[in-house]
Amino acid sequence: MRLPTVPPTAGLPLQAADLRPWGSENFAQALAHWLGVAEVQLECSGTSALMVALRTLKARQPQRSEVIAPAYTCPLVALAVAQCGLHLRLCDLRADTLDMDSACLQALCSEQTLAVLPTHLCGRVADVAAAVLCARAMGAYVIEDAAQALGARINHQSVGLQGDIGFFSLAVGKGLSTFEGGVLISRDAELARALQDHSRRHTRPERWWELRRSVELLGYAALYRPQGLHLAYGKPLQKSLARGDWVEAAGDDFDDFIPQHTLGRWRQRVGARALQRLRDFQQQTQAQAMARMTKLESLGLEVLGDAASDAQGIWPVILIRMPDMPSRNALLKAQWASGCGLSLPFVHVLPDYGRYQHVLAFAQQDTVTQARDWAQRLVAVSNSPWLDSSRFGGLLQDLQQAIGSQNKSA
Ligand SMILES: *Cc1c(COP(=O)(O)O)cnc(C)c1O
Image 1 (cartoon, rainbow, N blue to C red):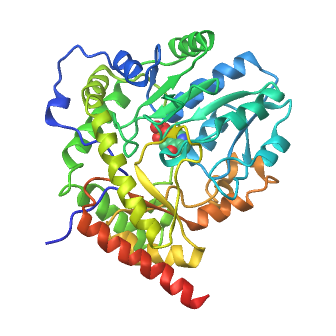
Image 2: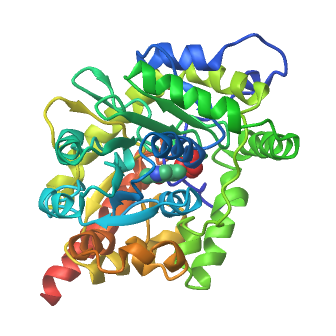
């Protein structure tokens, strides 16, 4: 029998009882309580949440037109910035962490800058304080991209509260999921009002989108299990990889158009019910990540943790930086298609995709050298509990071989 396909990230599986049509759960309230904040604002996706944030800030500072994001991030960020009529600038990364390089950020920040987007990539906690320092000096805002970090904390409070605005994603593969969904938070009560006002005025229910997302959520609930994932994820993955299409395999192939509408009641109730299991699930995945990181490190691999000592990230994946691109690519060519839990956070730095050139007109001159090096050497090991210890053991051997042959050829 075929081994089950491991999902690329540790998503919280839904249960049949989550899907009941009736109920009076208040997702926004439950999530605010869970995060330890006064209130949250629900949107139909993380990208849509980012667009609400950008447009709200743009209304306050209409003369500013640039948004600065790390060069290695989700292409949806670039599409959102463009759809808001703003210009994306790309910041290079540091050599030792996935944070934006301070000197580079300082050089990019100007009177044109509307917002800077420090990004908590793959659940790792970013250095927001450094971004705040740079942004403030130029009168710019800070939006924390915490799309992949719902539940991550710094200094005993949720990420997303050090900057002016923070957003989370509830998309498939990002932990807690309503198939698509987004969450906005702000520690600034006045800004929180402005975000709500903007949504109230511009975001409408869309029956067709809601129906589509509801059916997709049901399909996800049905197939997100060890024997169902081959159909939903494993098989399409193999097809993409057989064609050599890594961008499609990694799910980096996004449409330009970003839908914006409200998040339907039923999907909110599903989210509220699943949320009750999220803390336990994240504790379980954290314990698994800690144990597995030790094993990975003992092979001599470089595993990414949280740089700040008071940070507690979440663990959808374990990130490894391979010694070089050939060893990383050889590993993926040999193992990605087998569904054993290897994947890429993103395939490229934004300028290297080709298909997103049209939204990067203002970023042509921006330096992305170090970010590109990260993009070429990172690999994500799924931290799903369905990657059991025997298959993880197999992966350890594959990794050992990958760095072993690299050492020989060096
Ligand atoms: C997924 C993601 C987004 C967009 O969130 P969606 O809910 O998928 O629209 C934004 N930024 C980062 C870093 C992401 O990973």
